[in-house]
Image (cartoon, rainbow, N blue to C red):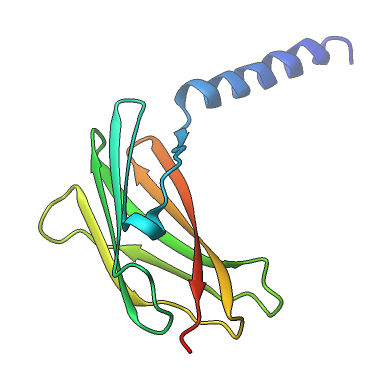
Length: 149
């Protein structure tokens, strides 16, 4: 057992070091923009520039919303958006869908009907997950959406 202990310790250290050095890098984009008010948010961090756009703003539940994400400084492979009701009294309403790239490789877009809720005012969280070669980039936005009268 005494001879096995150093081998186990060295193996674990090698695994942890390998994951740290060769595993995918994760970046969480910090921001203080109000995408709901402005309709657009540009985040510059770690030599990267990301622009997120919602159209129309303000968002109206049950109507189509266009979500656009542009990235500069990173070769993006895939963008996924997850919309989740935050602090809901009813079962979770969740949408997960990809943003597609059509004309420009650095621009990704999707149009979906925004979810609705029985509450008069609902907080929704938008989670963007961006996959690039050996890098994951994440950010989120909170929206307060009023139900149409």
